[in-house]
Image (cartoon, rainbow, N blue to C red; front, side):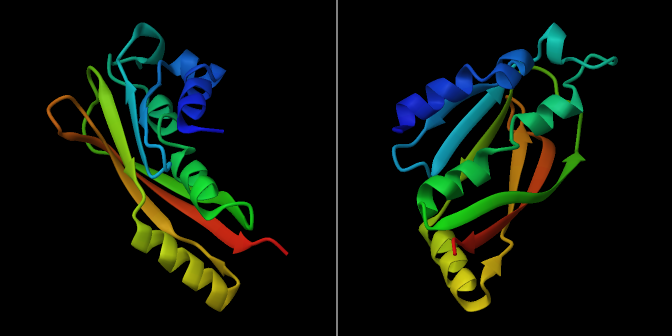
Length: 147
């Protein structure tokens, strides 16, 4: 599947439609993805800011999907753990920018080769329109070669 179709399918994925999440950019090599979420009545919490579950949902699958696309069919990639640090209330449109560097891919391959599996950790900030960090999400993934 090419990056255009990937972006389209994610944008019509029901949980993302329901939360108001929009995938704005997917690079052709699947190493850069930009996701946004405006504040709407359906993703707003009791105090009028972004619902924490929606903030997490907007960033949940992307590093796993990026690794699957970049490591190829010889690898198994799963989400293992995650945590979210709510830094300040999210108001307005928030954005997350995911990047996957070649050196990270090479390190993952090397660690898997050495140990049989590897648990890389990625951190992505969720920022508001001023660039202020609203939340910081840490994702731990599980990677190994297929038998």
